[in-house]
Length: 90
Image: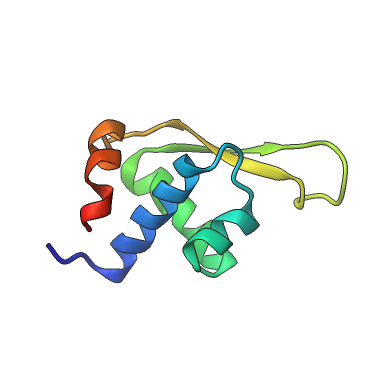
């Protein structure tokens, strides 16, 4: 099966979000090689297109916006178990 570049980026991002305990924006960028601004935009699409609840958790201390991580609170229309089972086949 072939998927579009945009869909692959979304899937790579979802995989990175659930593969790290507390993925920061920079960890997501290092893991996926997706530019930072594109990651932010894609997270917005995960929320609007897939109904996912991706939350940014702020950690106190440091510069504003630089300390925090992302977490998936709700997978929306995506079945988490099926995604994780089949992700490697894309």
